Length: 363
Image (tube, rainbow, N blue to C red; front, top):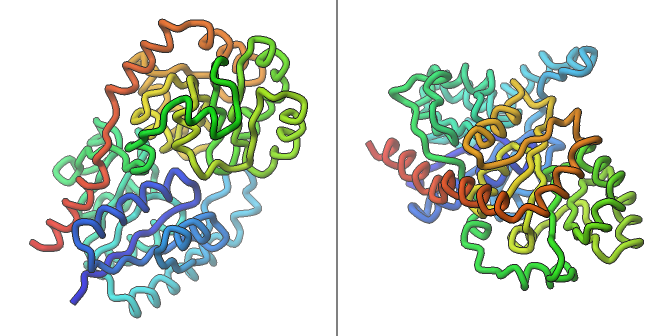
């Protein structure tokens, strides 16, 4: 009988891409394994997972809203409803293991699996563990971590530093800078900055770049700018005014963007591990409302190793564009950042995780 595994989580590309990488590695090692994803209804995994060729079931779950307490009134109801939905999913799919990658759906799925004595595996992608994962970690079969030193959050005997799974097409990038630049219709003679606030965009980054367009273009800095939905029309207007700007709400072919970029401006969620793999000089603007401020912890971890530059979200408006211009004009600093961030790259995390899961299930 085929082995059946549930992978739960999502919400952002930072959870979805590692989940897909783990699924791919499991399939590669055991082609007849059945994988079912469980996500939160209305979140981007409900679209991205089927696009990658995997089945997904959505449950009614939402996270705790830190900015509006009134929005949390329905949370207990949603939690109870999600557990009932998870119960039905387990009854029809009969999984032999459950993997949680972070995101709202991870908690009810892994909690239910643990209550039923089904092996559970957690992947913690941040350098500061989330509360849900810490609770789940007490009974998890294995906890895989992207950062080292995570034993302070989880039982050390069951914690394994694997790194963060990154997209194979990003890691195996054979695209030259010239090809990347041509893909976006830009000019190879100018320094190119990739601006990305993640799959959903970043208000502070977008507004800082919008306000500093003249300063950037006057220094012959050209942009590949992923804006997210909410800023796409404003950014498109800037692109009409200058041939140095390429913009879109979402970049599907990120490997071309990485190849073209001389510098990257980014949030510091799970994308941080892709940036280690592609060895780019990075300016991080951590998302300030991330749970346990984990994006700041992620970025500081690299800054302490002279592997990145950090601009606080609240200072983006006054400092970000100046930092971009400064870095664009400092080749030795670019080289140092590239070298140091590259030292932190782990490109086989998905294989290590898949191997450990299958080994446990075969035992």
